[in-house]
Image 1 (cartoon, rainbow, N blue to C red):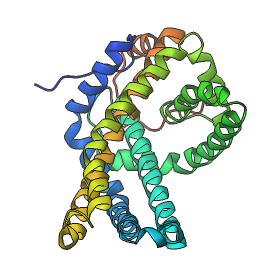
Image 2: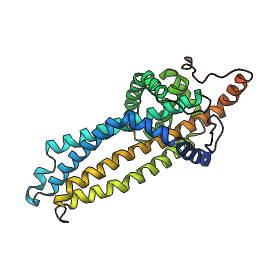
Image 3: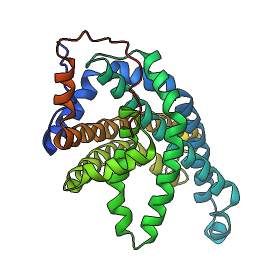
Length: 292
């Protein structure tokens, strides 16, 4: 029987991690179908650019040592790596936003499974607002890391909460920015720990695919793999890009952090349940009202 997860409630560190996996398991099929439909193009594009970048890297390791220094940093190789990195970052950003939109609709429908049209509607509605907010956050993060790195590390958990606040509360960047600092007060280590653990899990899972690609790329000349290099790179690059969908886990975890902190500071879940007493709930409710 499918377990209904109440998102708006208090959780400790262990419960946030456990419930993130539980929510992912219970919503695995619809969530990943929606992610494949909305991000499939970027997964294919990421596979193509990954194969191209790794083939360029393979050619680098095929040169004689005398010409290695001159060829290793060729313009085409650097360009292919930058394009691939950009596609991977874009894919991760789409996965992150789609997952948050899924959770937002899930909450609006009283812990019921969203439809694709609803999630896509939220995505389109928030896309440009989140895009502008993300650009501002990147600029602020760069400034923070330039100031002796420590300010950048401190700001990272704070900034992670801003996008969920914007989407779930349908609010402005300035409101979300201020609320994020308020919510994270006395809870910095909790949010940082959740981000670190879930990102580490996803990173370790991805390394199982990245390691064979590295071996194939660097050892194709010495392991007699030349005839199999391209097919193997295509297979493992595709698996690597498919595993990008696992970045839904950190997105779920950061949303649970938000719900936990909001409940702790504002008791939003309790107030919401009191407000709904005696009322008929409409599953097809509209977007929440703006908050400032």
